[in-house]
Image (cartoon, rainbow, N blue to C red):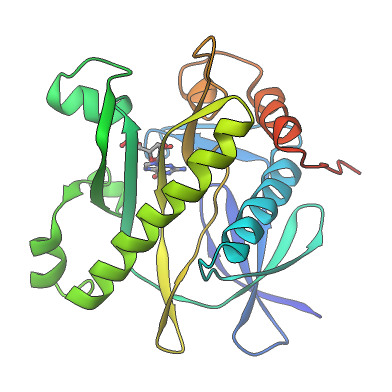
Length: 239
Ligand code: 5GP
């Protein structure tokens, strides 16, 4: 497999074409960013930890019947994925209120949400990823109803699977963001699932073990990601 042209560079990952049709190389870098790119920093080993964390979670989701873009890891910080045509949408499920939900609605931080709350956001840094609803998605033709329904049901199914997985590791899956795309007319889970895009709190102490440690300058960011990986039994190779 040959790494070819860089086709997209996000805040924490770079995507490269390969010599294999419909296959991209996803490189996890050590860069961390928050607040729509206003806060940026490099965190040692972040790329390796997140690549291997993501591989574990996406494999787990595949085992449980969620189709994803993930093919395999090819180095400690790189994976091969199917090339998707991405929807410009973020799907968020919240089991507890925190973050932007509390700022928007003034509700108590940590409030348990039963049923879990689903929200769509537009993926647009310049606009600060605004909250949108299904009507925006339909009217602007970002996705059709069938695609909306598929993204919603897959996002909720991920909640069932991962809530339980994290619970066994004495962690609360507070919320998370997923992104989807199309591949040969099928909707697949794309992007990543790492502590960069979800919130995980220790069940006993409610200590934050996710990217909020970076956003809120709490320190030990990657150490916390490694703690989560350890509790899930993920062997992270930092060579
Ligand atoms: P909030 O809307 O409270 O900022 O975020 C809700 C959840 O989605 C959190 O787990 C957060 O990490 C994730 N999330 C939302 N937007 C983004 C984003 O642009 N990048 C990343 N990495 N995660 C996001």
